[in-house]
Image (cartoon, rainbow, N blue to C red; front, side, top):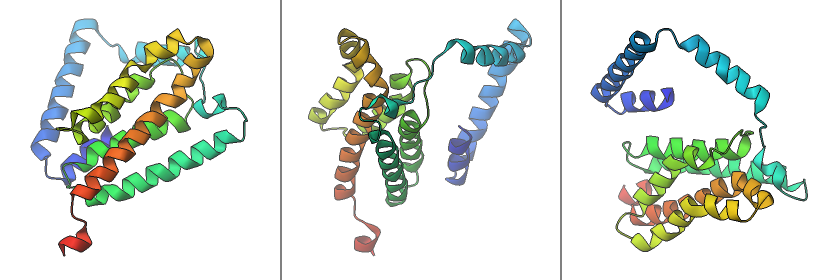
Length: 193
């Protein structure tokens, strides 16, 4: 979140950043007045969550095991390529792409506890749909990813566990497809010069 605020500030959205900071401060103050000092309880519950949750490192679900490091390296290379490519976008479009790619990379590279893949990947879903605006046939695969948790649940526990890996990788593939189409539509700096 801090990175988004810094990027927005550098892009000249100072009023938006200040409005957001004032709004969050007001919400925090209201919660302090309404329920009292809650921050310590919140941090204790997060620490307790580690004891009863079982984190899953998504690439470890693959067989054979040597595929796991290849997937991680591939996602990290993809992430660097996407971040480098964001320099071709207008500055107002960069923060969404950067955070979207970071979210998908985090979902694959770091162990996840709970079933939050789709929630954490919603920004990537929105960015992919936004890039496909006006071309509604390209929304169909994204909508399939949104429906996939129910499909995974119906498939049983083995397939349900694969959701941790397949949702982020599917969204990364869809984002790459939309990204390539966006680059074809926009002139590169060399052509514009």
